[in-house]
Length: 186
Length: 78
Image (tube, rainbow over all chains, first blue to last red; front, top):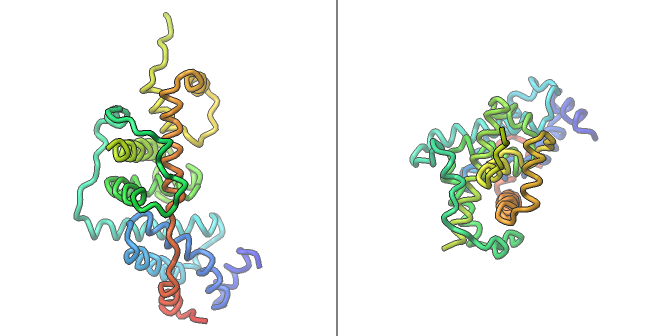
């Protein structure tokens, strides 16, 4: 069945269609929530909140955007709400862009095991680097670069202007790259 | 007036700003030409791509129990 039909059935109260939609997107939503908060318990909580919101407001979905974009907006809001509640750490500030491009270290990038998806050392470095970025920057980087949304879709989900998306994206990319470079130079 | 040559730092910034965008303006063409002749900037470009790839490949699966709890919470158990 096509997604549009599935949504229409779910909107008219068909539980089986609703369950199909939840199953179709739960992996994406859980994975995305984990990538923002880097914690499996928080990710599960955010996934539950997201689908609860989806079920409650699916009747308002008007097919003007993709369902996935609509869900990304819901999950993004829940992630930001949770981050605000847990506000217990400080994040890197980007007052001076120039620092992002200073090269004090030189890692051998060919030795970084980026194809090894189970490498625990690399995972720790990636977790630690991204947690220094504020959730607003994380969000833009993950939506645009990791989830593969377009710049326009990222702007739609985050309710930012396109120049603001681009500015956050370039800083996030440069910062994460710098953190990995430093970690592998030690 | 003689046009100033593009610097590596400008190229690095541009790489971070424009990766994934299909841009063909004069500045982009200049950047591409610089990348072809500067090993340092080429390396930087690759390292930004690897950074993105690392985060793309780092995924987690929904645990079966979490799936069960979700469906139960929504009243959608099989």
